[in-house]
Image (cartoon, rainbow, N blue to C red; front, top):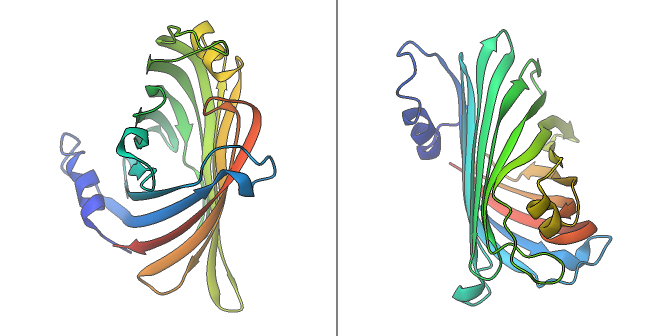
Length: 250
């Protein structure tokens, strides 16, 4: 079990919860990414960039929390850089059925900035010693700035933004004694509001990644992610990219 500053920070954020809450696990990583839009199948015409980030999560008898922060586009001018952060929580209500909530915030110096909020239901019972699948579904609300439609006109995309369904999944395994892990996160946005649909090219959008991870040592790891999206990230239709990572477990 790995403990870390981020996991302890996450623990501190739950101070208002019952004092007898039992701690089950915690993890945290720091990492550097290289994202290349042209290495995917669609060859998206956007410049490659570097990112540094940190993530952490923790599990308790009442549920679990996860969060990350990233500072993006380090190889570009400060006026082109962006920051992204996410926090999510599963709070057990009945058995493994949970009240689910997440907040995702991105501040982009060149393009639009937005905050997405989801609240709904989740399930954390599909887990084992080496696998997990944790779905959720909820109401989606958004605050957006400087969103533009296909003609470049600034539009209002704020407020109720339909619904979101998704999941977080993973599977750990060994190949010739090498510790590997496959992960997948996915989000589907449904019934978007007119403004958001205009900016993201449709009432429905998909967003996610499939990753393959390898622990080089107990401290250092590496991995590659296939990043996919549909009517998302300001891109019309299907797009993809590859993300190469080197990181450290804390």
